[in-house]
Image: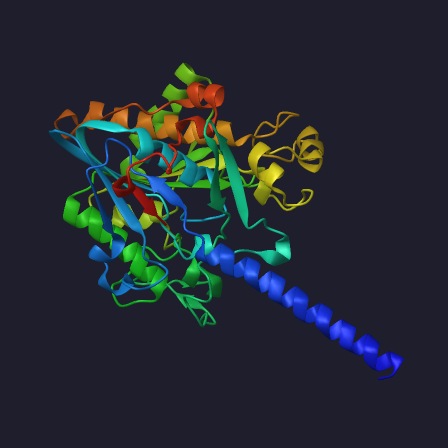
Length: 387
C-alpha cells in the first residue's frame, strides 16, 4: 500500500469515526427520557392521544397532567415547549407540576407540548444537545430541542404549508411548528394532530384559560409580553399592570393579529370558548448576533455583542452586564401565570381557580429554579413519569 492509499484510508476512517460519534450523540439525545416527578397536587395523568387518537405510537405522543381541586371551579391549561428551544417554558411548567396544590378548579399541564421538537436540534447553529439545572440534590438534565418537529417524525415538508381551515399560505417549515398548526385536525399532518388534541381538551373539559408559554429574542419586538386576542385583552392588561406595580417587572401586552392564522393566541379563541394567552420572556440565546451558543449563554443570558447593541438602543428589552438569567425568565412566567389566574377568578368568581405553593418572581430569583425540582430517585416510582 503506497503513501497516498494510506492517507486515503486514514481519512476514510476519520470520517467514519466522526459520523459514528455524532450519530450516537444524536441518537442519545432523541431517546433520552427526562424524568418528571408528579407533585402532591397531581390527581391523574393521561396521554394526549386520549384526545387525538392518531398520535398514539408516534414521537409526538406526550403526557397530560391533571391537578384537580376538591372545590369545583374553572379550568386552566398550561402548554410548555411549543418551541423546544425556549426552555424557560418547560422549567416554569414543571415548577407548577411538581409543587402546585389546587384548592379550587382544575389545572391541566402539558410540559412537553411538541415532544418531537424536543428531540430535534440545530447542529448547524451549534446548539447544545442537553443542559442541566443545579438543584439541592444534584442536577436535573434536560434535552435542548428545536423550534420545529423532527423531520424524522413528519416528512416530507410541503413546498408551501396551507393552513387548515383558512387556507392561508405559510412557510413550508410551519407544517412542523405547533404554533402555526392551530386549530389542527384529527387526520392532518402530525403537528396538526398535536394541536387538535389540545383543542379537544379545551372543548371536552370546558377549559376557561389556555396559556402557551414561550421565549423570544431581545431583538424581536414581540418579547417580554403577553400576546392576547380581543376576548382576553382585559385580563392581560390587568395582569401586566399588577405585576409591574406589585413585583417590579415589565410584561407589556401585544394584540393578537387577526390576519395571521395558525397561532395559538388567535385560533384557540376563535375556535372555542377558552380565553387564550401567549407569554414571551426574553431569551438572548436565540438572538443571531451573539457569541457561541453555549449552555452558559442559555442559562445566564450574558453576551458582549448584545450588551454593545443595547448601548446603541437596538434591543427591545433592558439589557446590562447581568444579562437575562434563566431564574428571572422562569420567575416572570410563574408570576404572570398566577396573576392571570387571579384576574380571571376576580372577573368570574363562580369559575374561580385557586392555586397555592407556587413561587412568584422574587422567590424564584432568590432560591433558583432548581430549588423547586424534586429528586426522582427519592420519589415513589408511581409518581415518576418520563417524557
